[in-house]
Image (cartoon, rainbow, N blue to C red; front, side, top):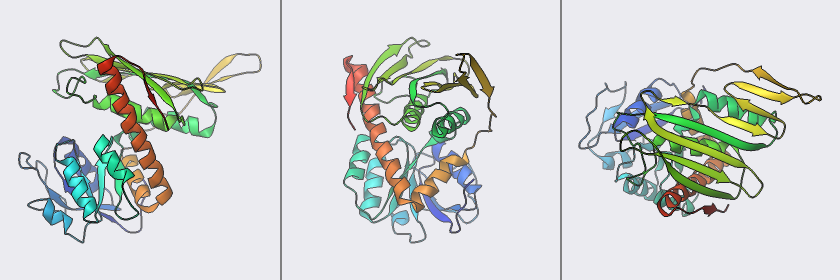
Length: 315
């Protein structure tokens, strides 16, 4: 866990499932403190208020509260964009869960050096991804050339299982963001197709290609009685990674595997990254560039699913 000398004071808008999760996790830290929260009109606060955190009537109270550094707008509710816009226009910094919508990404493009739009990436709290990314960044695999990941989503939760409502399932969104974190590709070609699911639910398969020859295959199947995932499989120019094991080739062209330590799931990485964005302008700029690319990637997947075409994304 990264800690800061000065505590970041956060106000919450919305206490749906994701909002309650973030409130609970942040309440356990000593470098980020929740100071106020707004529950939506149809939402109930099902957890006790953290010490020193108060419930306010509406967003207007948060926007004028000088004790708040960042307003965290959780969820994907229709009013999220308007809340974000009002906060930024009022000179207040805002954090939103990834991915940004197209309109939110436009706010980033029009932004100035004043209030900040921070991005909360849940995909960072993934033990397999953490290890895979460490191996890529170490150079042990060389340049990633082929990547693959499959998720079998839990059926019966009532959560998003397909893109019929115009939105992609959360697990697929996380994998797309992780792909961008594992690679450094300026131009992508994306094609997406439907996969068989359980009952009326359909899965989604995404194929990503780059002019340089990098390929990736990401699949989401809403057909499992329990959430399952293959983890990332990465073939690089110097080695490979799969399931907490790195593979190397000897001079005699023999392949051998070296098991890696399997870490515990570190949920604090989500909020560590938020703090770094707050304090480090260069990192914040990198996060916003990735967020804009993710927005375009998600949009391209949607277009490909609807029109049955391959979509190119430029840098």
